Image 1 (cartoon, rainbow, N blue to C red):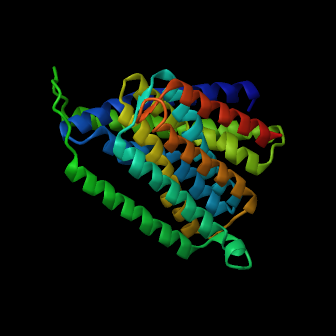
Image 2: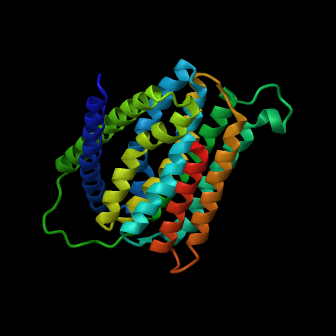
Length: 319
């Protein structure tokens, strides 16, 4: 297959992602309104799980094939892309409001999830074990923490109180279902198409597996999150935009990585620790941004700082 054909297929995948995101956002917003559930809750669960489907598929196949560096690089790189690139783009499109509960619950929880990954993956360094790995018992423990998070979200569902909005035309259940099905199909198809051909192009340039995983594959599998959050920001659905990012990062660490470790124990390259540290620093920076400038809002200058940080990090990483 020629390089130009690959580029055209990548463009096609991007178009599918955008159309899928638009349909998925319409369906998600209608679902939240119909059942009087906050858009934040929908963003943390349905939207986040749906847009993380490419990461799950890529990691399952990578774990089965023994490509451990792709497994870790995809998740860590995807979370970096979500936090720094996607969050900054949404903030540059429009200053993004963040609920106070997100600032002192969901964001710290994503940091705790990252700390759990660091401790469990570095057992050889911390507990003098032979080989650093994410074992099946580690995966089971992380899944337990993930289900505790789902329990918290379910409790939040029972406390959701949103104002009823005037609706000119009621949205039927069948239309909501079709919007979300079409949207998910577009997200999954585009998310599978783009990283596959992007990675193939990178391999032709003789780039290392880790570099491919933490940059191109990670960015490719994060395109559904990018498309969804950008469309949500453009539509002023701030809670879906932010909830999608935070929910996806939690889902990636506490569900996708454990599932990958249950397929086969994963050897951990300690060189990923600096990437985990960078991601943790970015999460802390995001938390600080909630209390600088206008409270509980990502201003454009804060979004620019996040974006500049990511660009600088990527340049140094590639070198």
